[in-house]
Length: 343
Image (tube, rainbow, N blue to C red; front, top):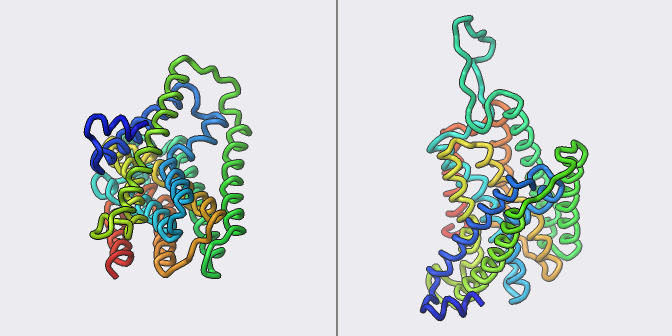
């Protein structure tokens, strides 16, 4: 339907579908945020569906590659590029520009504030109060999940590939994580009874329409790239190009919320999205075709381990990501790209 509509206006080129992909992705994320405000936030349903919506593009890519009998290596590259970009570049750049302070740190160690000193103004989206501490604990738990999932993929892939049994294991790990989150919400009874208004259902229909447009745009772009035989924008770099494509909406969100000084939103939007690619997308594709493990796979996992360690250590010690650390992560991403494309 979408290709036919665009063809009727003479719009049948990669740039048009790229704009469509970015536009419907941002529209879907915007209306999902509205659904949270209309009563979905804090419910078991919201906790369950949000990760799938944030990583919908990657799930669609896996479905397309399975249907087209695509190369497994491109799926592996897509997932690694997505997660490494999220945890290095898309957290590093906002930190370089504005700093990412989830929890305000007051004074030096052992120093007592003077009686005349005014209390420090809390950072937006965090601060030194209970909300900031809860945000930090939540982020640390999410980072531990990234570490655990990445370690599981590394352990299962030591025999040189991820086969069907490994796929079932990875999907099971992801579902266990989802159950843990849902039961945690139910345990605390954040909202026992929620009534949804008319706009909630209007937004839900918009999200479904956006998901369909997302599928059509990704399918067209994958088909176009696969048909190209020469140059960088071709099937030879399908995993890299689609990996960058999937993180475009996240990049817009990271820069916007970084500019708004909402470090907690920047962190959650990037870290949580990674749970879809690793382990879920890898597990789903491995059910249909084995995924080979190469040297680039080990490079990507090494950077993921290192970036999680950096984020966790700095969240514990400084309450966020300082500018210098953002610069280090950005340089690490440059090394990752060099190793994957040029080395």
